Image: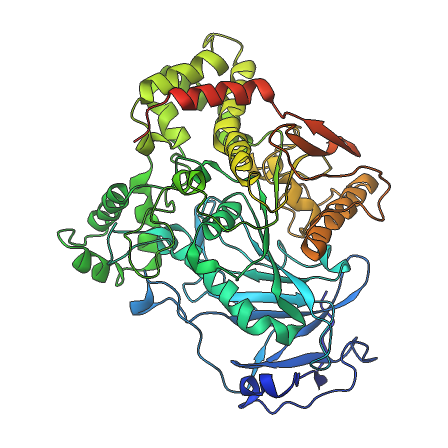
Length: 584
């Protein structure tokens, strides 16, 4: 519940003459003590930013700390009409008071085949435990989160991504929406529609933070950008871009996928091919990029999402049909080379970082096969054709037959084995190739720089799990699966990860305390700390020599332990395989 009354108080901030230009059209009245106002249970806070006045809401964290939420703030112009398939532009100011407690649009996406959201969706949420009183108020570190979902979903819904756990610490949270699917990533492979709009939306949000977060009590010079899965990839893509210098100062990537190292950042020719397929499906001319994009701008959102089916080659694959793509080298481009090459050349911002993975990463991609035995049989019967589609690495590998044969020999050496064993090994193979090995290789490179990086394997299995979501409601225990660490950073309240009757256990809440402490201490000090926890573990920066990492949890236990050389044999095999592979 968000306690809101009809009364309001102007917590409009006068931060000195240097900031007055942002308030010229706001009739702001300063208050003597915004941080400790006794009426915060009933009075809604108002602040002024250069765009206009925003009225927030009062909220309570899990531990009943009073915080403020400002939701649905435009950080870019609506990407509609002629702005569809274009990089985001700064937002226009508004008149009156923007209601920061209202329902706002999420970006269009498919939820089990149902299209949700609205194209006018570039809004963000800001949550803060303190509002500044004057220009001498201490500004808090900022954390901006981008969610995962295979670049197919982008939901900053407060039911899923919220401040109830993290804001028991002194940080400010920002959750921006971003375009996804064809609206976020359709590209003609040229300057007409270069693509990567969903990532450029995140860049625009970081620019908004630079210009506005001080009004909410946040320090624009202490921004930690973090994300999970494809959201982790967005973090890393912007780490590789010159456009983001100074916009964030450290970062956290949770289960980054193969497109950071190889695979799903598709070449311009494939981008153009997919755009043309969609164009033909919806009846648009494809003889010219200009004509094609103009036509696609006049198609409805349902038509564009329905047309995405033409990209599917087998079952649900490629799992990421609308991938980030290589752009032409023009103004505003953020990916003009493959990430692996940029990383190898050292062309990335040297910033403090944290990386994390989980044991069962591959289940997010194989759950649909696991619960459909006929799909596994179909996969095995046509494995040489289907495996490359599932891996989504085909566009970059010359010797795909040799690559697949090596994988079969190592992970699936007996296709007549027990089907449960084969399914588990297939999940392991896809998890290693798609998540674990890319993280391992990126660490090897990042750790050679001056800034500290930290590596963790989250291995706690609690009451709730993403496996419940991936399988459509199965209560079987698949261990710690892709995305499970997020459940201990955000207090999910929409019952996607377990039946409504399921309640978090005492150890679940203890793990939430551990995760919040580790993640926020890094955001605050640049070093993850177990201070205040029942642990003596010391998490040192990652060393390529010792390959040290922190194991967070062990099945149902919340214990933490320093370990070394994660999955050493499998990583050695993949090192050898990749060294022997001919890449395009």
